[in-house]
Image (cartoon, rainbow, N blue to C red):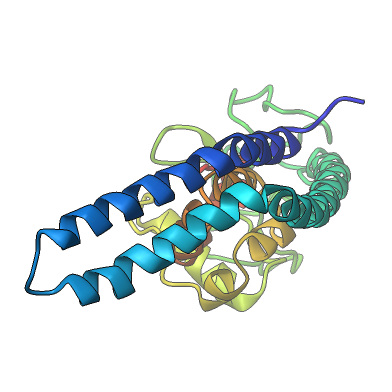
Length: 272
């Protein structure tokens, strides 16, 4: 069976622990003895040195050397528990990615049939056309006409005053020149407001602090379709004993809204 990167990292950490346990014990013993010898020549505070440093280090070293089997056995049990947790997290991510893939395919199918008229020139277009054959522009790339009935509109309108449909502008240019989906009407009002600010600022505004992202971190990100950053968070936390995980809690809070915007608007995953 092919082992995942997270499991390999856990295996590597456990292997290092097994190989360094006894050398660590000897280091503690030798260092404690050196402290004892040094305290002999220090008449001012030998008792303090012996009680505070010598004794604990000596006991830790002896315990690591003589009880290594017991320590490794306990570590093995914790390792197995962590491996099961990692497998469940990996399966959750796989299921989430599959669901997101199906959702993206369904959304793309819907997007192909939204424009009856070109919003740039007002001429009727094929339902599945990506480019208007009359003006050579993407049908939803401008705001001059209604995509449903072809009547003239202005850039500030949100609905057509003739047929009443919501005006769509799926394809617009972002700061880096890539196409962006600027229709956020299906999102909660909080994200609609945030994403409009990001888009209208040409992405110089990156979103405000998100308490939900700070509180739930990678779980929040995965529920929004953002998966690259949580994957880095989990792998990094496993390799650094949680240090990267703590850092990413703040990254999600500060950059979470922009990560989510990049996924919705540009179908792009940001690592940070």
